[in-house]
Image (cartoon, rainbow, N blue to C red; front, top):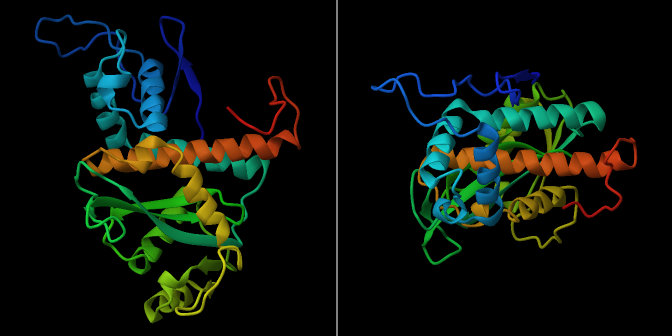
Length: 281
């Protein structure tokens, strides 16, 4: 998958993965309308919503209303834009650094979803309040590959298959020899049968046997969850539409991937504007 930029009549570049839009709404009954807000302007507001977790009314400005942000999120979520951006980030990381697909770790994380919605359910770790579960598959270094969102009361084990399938959709076919690292929540005959059916091997923590977090190689996915929880929209998701929830999950995964790419590329490549510190802002 490739992305290139096209130059519009006003001289601005826009991404080719976004649908082409005219300066005015063509189907307006009077044949006229206010100019459409630029995609870049709306995207900057969406990133603010993702980072801070604020409501659209709080981050709206005179140049971009909260209704515009909501409409654009709904439109882009329906088109799967963030999934494409995440796939492009993974492609760039694989080309410049290389994905470690020989070791894949999968784990789930429960966060708050106070507004309810399509992906909200009773949280078993938050006194039955509404919660969201995301299941993430990461490579050997913690790069998020596949993401599946579900209600908080769903068990991790049934989400193992969809999560690995989501990883395949994002990065393509997985190698023949893959070792899947899982915690004790996946210690079941069903999980082992699925791993065997896929032709993979697995290291699964045993129930009732205490094990420190960094025992084995699955700790990287725990770190990935921690990075994703740095985004306020994921810690406390107020989106009710399931597509909008997935939109923000994949957008956060794309940003995590790009930050890892920049950090690891700093010691391998030289370019203008290269960060002079390991702490990325």
